[in-house]
Image 1 (cartoon, each protein chain N blue to C red):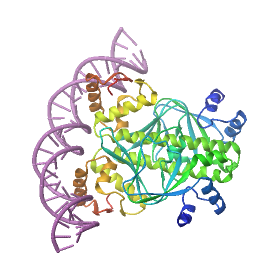
Image 2: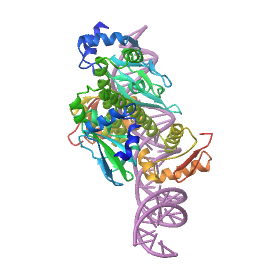
Image 3: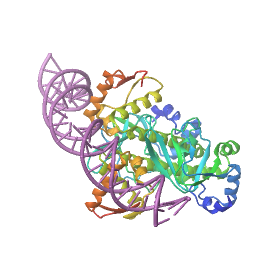
Image 4: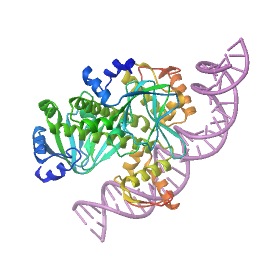
Length: 222
Length: 222
DNA sequence: TTCACTTTGTTGTATAAACAACAGAAATGT
DNA sequence: ACATTTCTGTTGTTTATACAACAAAGTGAA
């Protein structure tokens, strides 16, 4: 835990807290670090979630298996992101998603219920916390809308171009790495992997993009 | 404004407040009611949003025009829902969506910035408020994930069945009204209207659903 | 290095969806 | 009650994508 102390202190969840407040909160939260292997399930559909999970190392896919067994990747999370935060607030709502470790992963686990019932939202550090959580949830919300835009394009080409330009904008560069391999990207955009590969090469031949493995560059024309 | 007083008092935003707290807040917020005609824009892409908008009457579509002019309906809001709340919290983020009145609409407008800068989150009513907003944002988040599931199905048939069963579950009944006309539903599910109509009749012929205008009934087999 | 395994790219074929065009029904205004 | 407009359902044609099968490239372990 000590190892991650400064990382935790600078994370969006605990942003703006003094050392004392942070220490107190971590105790009050019964904070602990848990490890998950690549591929391991962190949260399952149907779970009732009472903990805040914050990623310390690794990446996590938020997924859903469709009725007929097809996999949907809703979003991919990485360091400092929170897993399924929305379900913590809506207490009697079951998770309708899976969270799956996409690499070996370390997660900070905070018992939210325990903390809120003890201090009953009264202490000042809780006030800072809830403000931070509110900000985080807003950003997540905007990200989800972004994703809806990505997958709502009607052709594979438009989905790819929309996704890639959004990524470029997010990273403020025409040249960037994407966090997905081809199959995962296809599952994220809800398209067939081979058709996507084909379209990617076509875009490259046309000079709209260049790529090598997970590195992409957008031409000025995109 | 007085007309809506009890409605406002029981809305999720102000839930759990005393009459005094509510009155104080409405004043602090510089609360007022605005009217919009059917089709009028309430929020435009690129706007910087500093007000909380709560729907008092009517329905509002959250939309996005794709680069090539196709319309995407991200979600539809109705009475007591908040419009673009996520963008209020993320202050220096521009709205990336349009909010369009889908009927004649009345909206309660609250100047969030003014209020928070005045009381600096210190007063007790602000604490209740931010907790409420946090809850609301969580629910919105879960709704968006739901929508992603709906549009991520690969066939028109699966999109319709997923959407309809989710609606049924939400309303706890096999028999319900949907808030969309056919074109809007198609824009919501990102599919062609005529192809959707065709698939709906097919589902009806197969006995999986029955419908008349906006009223739908699911057979037990769905 | 070699071998097994995974990932990515390529092609042909079958299929589902978009699109366009239209007809009938329903809603709206005068 | 009528004309006008909007909405919904139907059909045929074109087009894009899924799917399957395979080849090539990359990766990692023995």
